Amino acid sequence: MRTRAADLDALLVGARGGRALDVGRLLSLVENRSPDVPALMRTLAPLTGHATVVGVTGPPGVGKSTTTSALVTALRARGGTVAVVAVDPSSPFSGGALLGDRVRMAEHATDPGVFIRSVASRGHLGGLAATTPQAIRVLDAVGYDTVVVETVGVGQSEVEVAASADTTLVLVAPGMGDGIQAAKAGILEVADVLVVNKADLDGADATVSELRRALAQRAPGEWDPPVVRTVASAGTGIDDVVDAIDERSAWLRSSGRLGERRAVRARSELRALVADAVLGRIDDRRLADLAEQVASAELDVYAAVTLLLGD
Image (cartoon, rainbow, N blue to C red; front, top):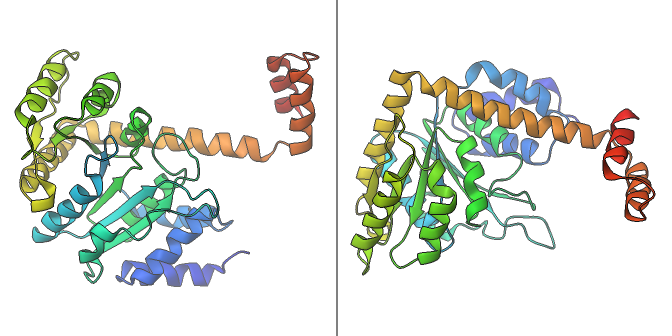
């Protein structure tokens, strides 16, 4: 069911005025893939491009939610407004977000300068929900200074977060050998800031040294990711993380790389939307019939693709 244009305008006015309920309704349109989304995106386009988008990623158990909550506190202390998109594993029964309560972020629930939304990944690979780029656009357009995107914590496949953020924080913790290996194998390549959380635990110095050695082995680039120690549960080191984000943002603007980063984000979003559009035009019965022919070796898979796209 479509929403009237006047109602969309009213929602947008309310959302830009700080009405959290209207922000939530706009995000629900996006998450539910409402037929109103194209019109909404056209309206929002001139209002976007102002928010700093920060991705928070890393292996499970590293403290992403605790770090995100501490980041919100630090950003608010500096006077900025913050929106959080927390992408959770999908419930196998409802498709909803399993961790939707976000207990660790409850302290921000009454702060009008903070908006927190848990969304379900719904099986989408890469640690993000398929609608995350549009959700970011909504939160940017309604006026939040910083949009933090926290991923589900599924390991190496989380590198997709880099395509959705201006600055990507990669979290690891002392003693998490698998986490360090994951960072070396892929996540390290997308890190703009490396955060060693739980740095009060044994092995923190070794973890920092190992990460710095790994960084030294990378191909030289214009931006050298800093390694920051934190104890997010106590708020220790979080101001250093915010300083690193600010330094990264200033560098992106002064170097002209911000536009390039956002063009990459737009390209990734366009690819996903084109793929969805193509799949949406394929008849399920035709797909099933061709799949059976491929399975029985009556048809090769490339011929099947040609037939599907040629229909």
